[in-house]
Image (cartoon, rainbow, N blue to C red; front, side, top):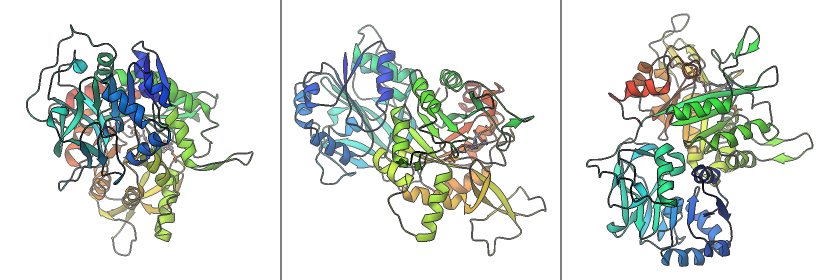
Length: 525
Ligand code: 1PR
């Protein structure tokens, strides 16, 4: 029996799922007594350092945790569960951490052009030999998502190091206490091996080789499932051509969401995104099938899951009001790691541009405050609007190599809402900028012009947005072959590329894309 400390933030579901997958039972602890009686304690953390320490203090968990750690009992901290062990964090000045490991937690600060948060799959360079990594080669990549990293005073506490602009300590070990900055529960087979070793280390499994040289962040390949109910009432994965998902009047049916997600995980997808494409008109908490899709998927899929569609505040037919935070919380509880906001982000940005005031009440601000910036993705659905010349156009205009229908050489990228049904005055570059300012952690950049065309990503759009923000950008829409992925990674500095149609129709499997890319691009094999 494993005890998992849940202080009430984020997605503990996926940690429970990973441990249960290995045949162990999990007891979820919320009280000091349960910490004291634990035999093996797992402490996952997400969100904000200050908030975490405040909750631990309120619940009376600090003393039992320290007693547990000082008694050298088996402990696995994950992400914020690692940072909690330190004296303090730049994320919450003045708030003391547990102080079990001397040192601080610092924010990534770069002079070079690297995105913060550090999101994605990166390697680990072992600093000492312990059974936690037995059975691995040492070449595996693990999933990271964080803006802060630990700095132990004593180098002997470092278990692994990772490079991202700087070299940083990516896990620590002191006796039976280990803690990782990366998320084993989101790191596929390599992550499950780490859990297995924590639960029951195998002496026979070979220890990994210590790698010389640095580690590198991999470019991510994301599989996207557009989900909606078809006319027969079944929840299906569908796919549009420039957002039109009907073929001869029927909603295209490309498979079942849970089955397809599992297939993509097994084929090597680095991340899976579900978009409830009619979410703008449904109320997601009544649309229980989507929550169920997440619950079922997260039982078998151990890479990050994003869910989008209908994330906004809502008043139901009985007059009960739900904040967007409550809607998002239900998704996180069901297994989502990130939520994606589409239509509502456009309305939030328009309101901000009109008033110039950060109200603190928008969905972006509320959700990022509680779950962290990395948990908030903005899905943009832009369409090209051609103009003869840039002068007098208030939007962000670019000169384009793809001329318009009347030979226009300039265009801007108009944001749309309700699945492309309504164009708005704000452009994609401005939208991305403002969303970053309000606390978004990542941009999912679609293109209505390219969606479903197999003609390649809209490099001009992607470059314009990626250059305007410091958060990671996921390029989406138009992938038709592996070369399109290489092109988008070579021509822009996006961190990830997403595709739907070619994967659903089995035209190009994910491993073929990765095999092609590995010659010139860092990827997770
Ligand atoms: O506005 O917050 O309720 O969110 C609705 C979400 O649903 C948005 O993220 C929006 O992008 C998505 N959506 C709405 N309507 C459609 C549609 O297709 N009719 N799908 C839609 C968007 C675009 C991509 C697609 C890529 C790759 N799908 O995600 O997967 O274009 O496709 P490809 O590789 O086949 O070219 P809200």
